[in-house]
Amino acid sequence: MRRCGFRHEKKLRALGITQIGGIDEAGRGALAGPVVAAVAVLPEKFRHKKLKDSKQLLPELRQKIYDELVGNPQITWAIGVVDSLEIDRINILRATHKAMRLALEALATQPEHVLIDGLPVFPFPLPQTAIIDGDCDSLSIAAASVIAKVTRDAIMRDFCAQFPEYCFSQHKGYGTELHLLKLHELGPCPIHRRSFEPVAQPVFAFAAAGAA
Image (tube, rainbow, N blue to C red; front, side, top):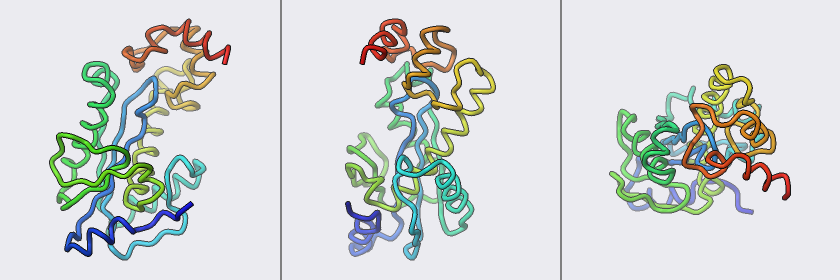
């Protein structure tokens, strides 16, 4: 497996593009809570031996890297958040793209080009390069991945204080066995995504999960 690096960024810099943002999201596949996108613009000389896709990092290391990223004055970053009501209203794909655009709008200075994890996003206000598994390949996207994930996890812990019976601090809204059990027992709460089938039909979803 190739190491997460700056190969995509170097190709753009060779064309004279110096301000490059990495964009990634967290929470797209969850059954509850918001989808959170982040954009990170790293300096050209940035180096980090342990930064990679946030899903491959243990929580303690992910938090440490997050603190290093957001505390670095040479790194420009921002987040965009779209809540569960908006997800239900416009669907998760549009909500994810909206969160990405909101993150960009929150930046004081816009990058010249963005690297996006996954597939191209349309419409989009800036030139883009979409990279499948980009969070494993681009340090800019990996940085955005960590910022988005840690931000969303904190949001879900706050929701856990409001709805402790659902144990959101443990599963962060994803469809784990524990979450499906609580959904089966209690039904959905205000932050559940009603347009997602396991939430709309919790009994059947839990039965299917138990049989798997």
